[in-house]
Image 1 (cartoon, rainbow, N blue to C red):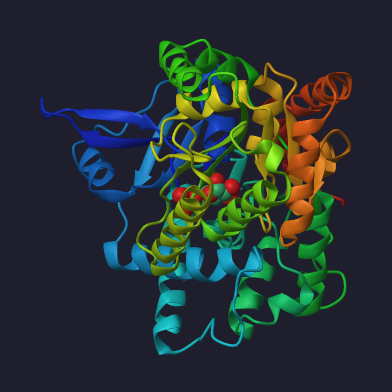
Image 2: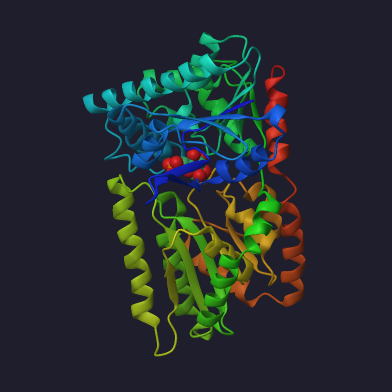
Amino acid sequence: MIVVSHRGPYSFTRNPDGGFDARRGAGGVVSALSPLLARLGDDERALWVAAAIGDGDRAAVRAGAASAPGIDLALLDLDEVQHRLHYDVVSNSVLWFLHHGLFDLPRRPRFDARAREAWDAYVAVNAGFAECIAERARPGEVVLVQDYQLALVPGMLRERRPDVPVVHFTHTPFCGPSSIRVLPDHMAQALCRSMASGPAGFHTRRWAAAFAASAREVLGPGAGDTTFAASFGPDLDDLRATAASAETAAATADLDDLLGDRLMIFRTDRIEPSKNIVRGFAAYDLLLEEHPEWRGRVVFVASIYPSRQGLAEYLAYANEVDRAAARVNERWSTGDWQPVVVDAEDAFARSVAGLLRYDALLVNPIKDGLNLVAKEGPALNRRGGVLCLSREAGAYDEMGDGALAVHPYDLVQTAGALHEALSMPAGERDRRAALLAERAVARTPAMWLDDQLARAGGPAGA
Ligand code: G6P
């Protein structure tokens, strides 16, 4: 089996001894797949093809040191300029914004000559991946291509290697038929044609249906009917091992010192516009305004860390997040109580400590393919914590009936959900927490992988 994703399972940095340290990559695909693939026996050993991202990865590739435990790793050393246009411009500023509904349409996007050049780079990078896989795939070997950065790979690979079964899986939402028309025709056609050329998976039926409708809009009737929905949940063994680690124990002790017997609202996210962090703080501000009883009795701990800092929108959003947190603190802090505590350290153990300890977990994205935190939290939490979950997160389909629904744009409603979460009687909290804990692990990474392999075996149906 060959797994293909833009970001690899490990990132490499040079260490002082001249060797390389490997650190597990970020994101849901990596956390779901790497423990699973690393556990496969030697005869089933998977090849993972990804891009070398950053100087450390590139140096490791050139030194022949980019290797990972239990997995054969091929990191592509791409042309740096092309790669930047592929990643920063098309993948993150166009496709991510399109699928998460983030465009401010009167102003953006603008498909000028530079955007055409960026699109050519996107095509070239996808072709580089397809080329590498075509060379390395054994006859009939299944290829599982992940996500929007590589949406052209399935079509390109089918042309080069018709013998190889290819499945594409998108971890983000997919935009609907009116939004796909925002893209220039050649882009919309290329993306839809490639993804519709075989099984195309999504975390929920909703995103699968949106893709199918977009494909019909762009390509005509019948297109996009090879979609399927298959979600995953956390790798429980892996999560429990982190929960039992010394790093998590230290982070838990820090939290205990910080909180004492106060209640805790928690969130953990990469700082990006789709996560809706600013509105989360604004809703908390409203909660403190309307419910004075919570002042001094609750702390909102936000474990939020930088993402995609090559993009101006992300840097600007990170500033807005800082200001929104500071505003709440300026308004409500007292001598012995700080209402918002931002933890900017990107350490999984610190997030896990928060997930074990929360009384309310706020997951309020504008849109999200799945949102693994919405499952990791209930799988780990030990306090009957309440999940406040955006209806726009893919995970809502599975977790919604145990969660409190959050309308991501409605601050009054969100503040109300936080209030309800903090005031919920113990019996009701426990009932919901037990239901959510069960749901969180009902779909394992292994089931998700099997669903893709099953689709690879024959024609897929919705
Ligand atoms: C999240 C999304 C994935 C996406 C990844 C990319 O994890 O769920 O769909 O592939 O972000 O993140 P990156 O940091 O590589 O741009």
